[in-house]
Structure formats: C-alpha cells, structure tokens
Image (tube, rainbow, N blue to C red; front, top):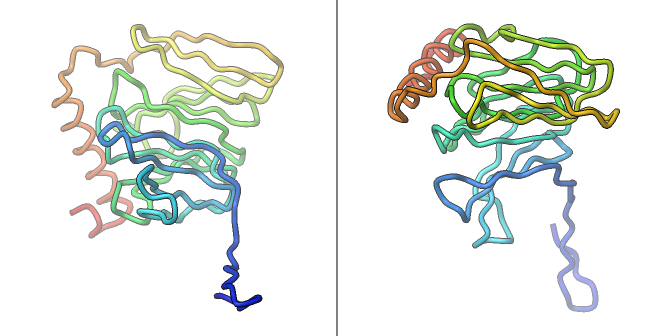
Length: 209
C-alpha cells in the first residue's frame, strides 16, 4: 500500500527482527534467515529487496536455523514455540516436527558424522540428542542442567558435544552409538532421504513423493 506525500510515494511496510541466519553449502550467495515473528526467509546477497522463498510454521520467534551438512536443501529450525522443524528447500511447510517438552529451544545443530542425528538445547537446561531414524517423538539421549542452555556444538573429529549455559559454564559430554564416520557421503545422503521419506509418509501421507 502506498500514500502520496509531497509528490513522493511513501511505502508502508512491517519490519521484523532477524534472529539468526545460515549460508547455503550449495550456493554461497544464498542464506536463510530466522525472524522474531516465526517466519523463515530464503535470501540472496544478490537481491536485497525481496525474499527468494518464505517458510511458515512456527508460532513463535525462531532462534536458530541450520543447513544439513549432508543435503544442502535440508535445514532445521529451533523456536520459542517449543519445537524443532525440518524443512526442504522449495516446500513452504515443514516436513517433520520434533517436540519433547514445553520449553523454548534455543539452539539446534546437525551431527557432522551421522546424517539423521541432531542435537538441541532448551531454556530449561536440557541437552537433547535426536536420531530420527529411531524416533521422531523423543530424543535418544538427554541431560538436564541447572542453568538455561544457550548453544551447542558437535566435535567434527570425535563423539563429543559441548554446550554453554547462561551461568557461564561450558559442559562437555561423550555421546555413544550415534557416529557413522565410516559411511561415505553417498551412503549418508541415501540413508537421510530414506528415513525422511519413511517418516513423512507416516505423518503426512501423500507428501513424500
């Protein structure tokens, strides 16, 4: 909508705060941006006036977005609405939703050695490790801290995850039975596609094709 003011067009628009972003592994010009109003936007450094795509599903601020290291068209988002959502580039609705409690999810990270594993941390102090080849309903491992956790990171060389809390402490955990470092990239990609397709067929019949 525009209004004429002194022979000039004044554009009226609603702006929202950006919360996080992640660049595509496939095209260094493309990135996804998480926003305070729950939308996720696909953007390009070549176009600063419009979004390439927008994704809607979260009901609260999105705190983190992460592209998959195995499939560059897949990404995860973590939100204040208690959920983690999995998305596919080109689909405006999420493929899968993960929720284990009623707490804001502050960060999410893909495991670098297993394409179907990711971790997250919550404002209630929970570190969760999910393997959606085993379950989309509950994490395969969780640890509770007394302090709100703000971020996490998987080691790229050993089965270790570290997370940081608002109490200023960094915690380090050894994780078991999740690494598949001897799988080839193609094997990781094939397994990821098969697991996603099987889960989408169960949760959203007709959308997995």
